[in-house]
Length: 194
Image (cartoon, rainbow, N blue to C red):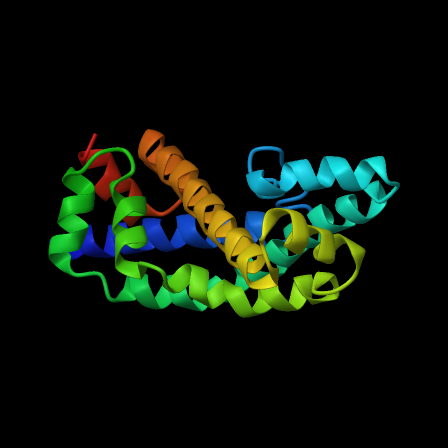
């Protein structure tokens, strides 16, 4: 049981840190269509209107800023992930080993609750601060009712969801071929679970 817990902790930490490294770099979000953060759905009509009056470049800049803000915020989750994984109990680890293909990701997501979104909010706010005034944000406020805080929260939630999906992909890769991790404990624990 101790080895199972250590192996699951190692695998989960590996997956979480790989997700942070993948998404927390330039073009981690913007350059990957699977995770690229679009304007919130209720802003699409406003974006079309703004493009029609020659403000398309500003709309594109806003989308770029949203994704760059997410890229800058993701590394702040590193410490949160590591400390959460270290607190995992033996029972949690056994449920991951016996669980389905995304049991570890689900456990991490459940343990963190809203803390991942809350951890990224300040950095995302800093990345979007330039858009807290001006033609584009005024149009967003007037036509859609969304404000800067709403946009910041939307980007944070979408970034958080993308991080968990990336962790899930890492978990699936580890479960499919635990020996490829190069970690004998991970290989033993997840090899036995197959």
